[in-house]
Image 1: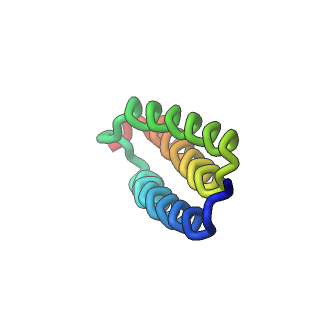
Image 2 (image 1 turned 45 degrees about the vertical axis):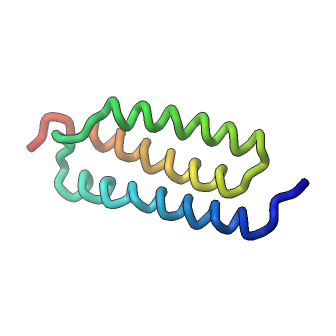
Length: 90
């Protein structure tokens, strides 16, 4: 049985909110060129969770899960890249 349209709409709205929440962190690291207070372990574990959610979304054919987790994963990878690039700077 296929989900009603509004279920995917709620999923897309939720995914948009949680994904957008990562972008202020990306902007802050880029702007300050510093990531000293950032937990790399937290973002690494979070990234692994996003990969699993992305695999789940593909298996479940859920567009909202796929899109939200793919974009979130890109943001987390950007955070990790910038954090490693600016490690040790204050």
